[in-house]
Image (cartoon, rainbow, N blue to C red; front, side, top):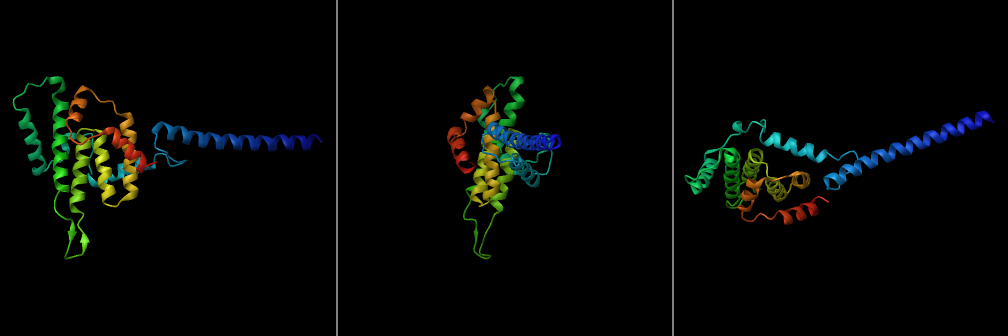
Length: 215
């Protein structure tokens, strides 16, 4: 009788520990998912972030913290210079000079990327295929802009291009990444001013769209 009782207690303990473990694992996944706000799944709550980072490394293989090493093409620099001309000889306080320069540089690169995307048809009549060169070029510039001045909206624009390229899975990962970064984003006064200068940027609508694409 005593032996049977001990076995029952042991079995009950195993069942209880198993239920606690399942509850802990699922609860952890839900907590992380709620924190990110992107409907992440159990055991895969950070897989989208890994894929985004891998994409960044593939398209721009360098250390993003070393901004001075980010290559800027002649065409990108031309657009940067056009923005700088708008500021003229305006005095900029030394405390914000570096941040402003990075903001202008990223914006110029972003404009270049948009111009690339506005080129003619990507359909190659000879090979009967779609020429993805302009998309890849634009993606690379968007990544540069984000590394130089990490505004989450650059990530949203990148996700939109990936969606247009029919890369549905990576686009969804990028939308999730945008939602995460937008939630974490704490803009300073200069960021607010620079964001307002971006025509066509509507952060609220971008968040709604991203949530729809990455539920």
